[in-house]
Image (cartoon, rainbow, N blue to C red; front, side, top):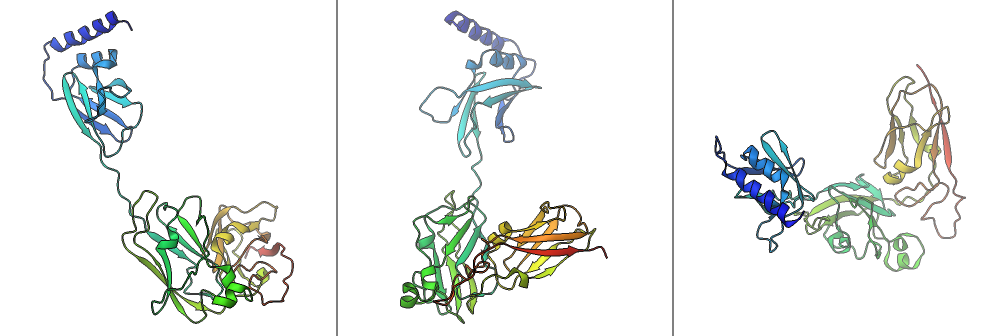
Length: 357
């Protein structure tokens, strides 16, 4: 656009402003949070036409910004309102000023809501856990910041005595991809019988003792918000679990054909619930995997199918990587007595008959 065209457009806009208006309405602007657009009301049709014809007569910018340049916007008309759509989203909590038709309007965007993170679950959830437990899990309501667990999580006995260095010190913390679930890995060198750290300092958890895991209120989310209050979880420690996993000993509750009741397993010890969800699968009589809602609390496993059960022989398949919370796998105990040899680790398959009553 050359200088003459620019001058003519602005002159046309000025002429529109000089026309007598039948009604003088107050010009107002508000943010439509659903679309991110600014809705301007109270402008005369001529004024809206002038802005749409020449976007330079409108300016939208941050309040008190050192730059006089307005943001890139597109303008349109919807009924009696003008829609100002910024090219880029406006910032929550900021204030903007919109200049149009000789008016400068202030637009304040609401500040983002402060979400306080919460500890929503702790695993294993059972009241008594084995003395040679390898992993504890903390599940938060919000993504959490990395690099703070070592200072913010402590383990103490019932009398308040802190357990010295109970967790394995790793350069990188163990978070799931969403950064909502943290894995606390108890030092396996102190757990495994007969190795140096175990002989020198003993296992972090002692059978018969009660412990309290405490998370500091200063633990922060990825957005920088603290827990605001300390959280603690108490549990008792039972005998160590040094047996290999034996799926054939699990109790199985088979549903009736034609129903959508869950197929359920009851384990003979506490399993790693995350591993159970991934590594236990069910195969239908036609060889296809059974789809549905799978849950596990470590003490058991259940599957509610997407479709009603059909009569026939199903196969429950257990991946050899499945572990209980003491690190034992199929045929291979993690914390075996020194000098013992476990059998080779293989997958397991259990036939389950579902019948029509």
